[in-house]
Length: 413
Image (cartoon, rainbow, N blue to C red; front, side, top):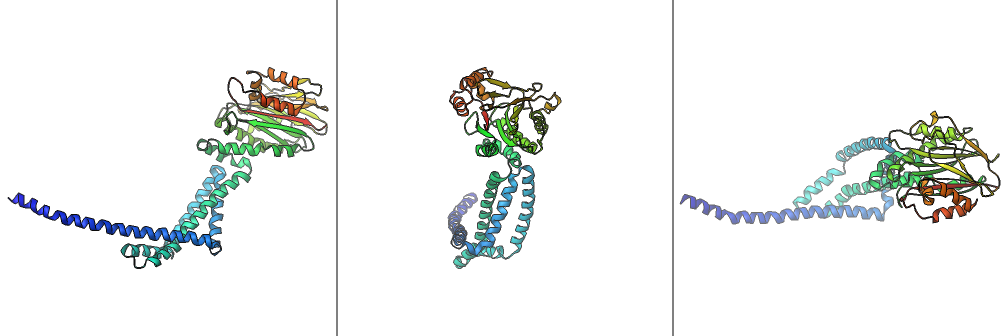
C-alpha cells in the first residue's frame, strides 16, 4: 500500500508540472520575440536612416570606409602585408573594444535588453537605443567590410604587379588561379606592348592557356631598356596550369626587377640576370628566348635557353633559326651564367620580321619539333597578319593542348 500511495502522489503532481512547463514556454518565447523584434527594428532603422541621410554620419562612414580600404590594400601585398594588417587590426580592435565597452554606447543597450526581457512597456525607447548602439555598430562594420573589398580590388588592379605575386600564389589553390591569370593579363597587355614599340616597329602578340580561363605557364614581355633598345622576351615554364603559372608570375617579377639594369647588357647577360633572381626550390625548368633590338642600327641580338627558339623571316621569304643556345641549360637552376655567353647578332633589313614562339605553337605543326613550323614560315613569308592567322587557324596537336604564346616583331621600314 505505501508503494501504491507514493505512485498516486506522483501522478497527482504530474498535471501541475505540465501546466507549469506550458506556461513557462510561451513566456520565454514572448521574451525572445521581444528581444528579436527590438534588435531587428533597431538595426533596420539604423540602416534606413543611414541610407536616407548619409551626410549625418559622414565622419563615421568615411573613417570606417578608409580604414577598411587600407586593410584591404595591405592584405593584398603578400604575407608581409597580411602580417602588418593583422597587427594593426588587432591593436585597433582591442582599442575599439575597450572604447565601446567602457563608453556610453553599450551601457544603455544592455539596459534596453534587460528591460525588454522583463516588459514591453518601453518598446519604442528600447528600439531607439538599439538603433543608436548595435545598429550604428552594424552600419560601421558593414561599411568597413565594403571598404576592405574595394581596397583589395583596387590594389589588385593598380599596384605594381610584382608586389602582388605572393598574394596571387597563396590564393591559387582556392581561386583556381584567377589571381594569377589577372596578373598575367596585366603584364601581357597588348596595348601596353604596342605603346612600348611605338616608333620602333609593328608588333603582334598572343597568349593562350592550355585550358580556357586558367593561368598560363608561358609568358611574354616587351620593354624598353635604359639604353633605348627594345627587349623582347618569350619564355615557357615546364608543364602548364596553375603550377606552371605560379612560376611564370615569379619570372615576370624577376624580369621587371632586371629591366632597369639592362642598359649596355647583352641578351645572354640579361638572361643570366633573370636566372639569378629566380628561386630554385620548385625545380621547374624555364626555356627562354630574348631579343635586344637597336632601332638606330637595326641590329638584333638573340640569346636562348634550352628549347625556346626564335626565327627571322627575311623579306625574300628565307627563314633562319636564331639559336644562340648556351649549354642547352634552361633557366630556373641558377646555372645559366656558368656557361659561356652566346649572342647571335644579325642585321634586320627592310621587310624582315622576327618571331618567337613556345612549343604549344610548334606542336600544332607537328609534335616533337619545329620543322613543320619552319615550313609554314617559308610558305607564308614575312607577313605578320598571315602568320598570326595561320597559327591560330591550325588545329590543336593530337598530343593534347598546351600553353601557347608567340611574339612577331617587324621593324619600321
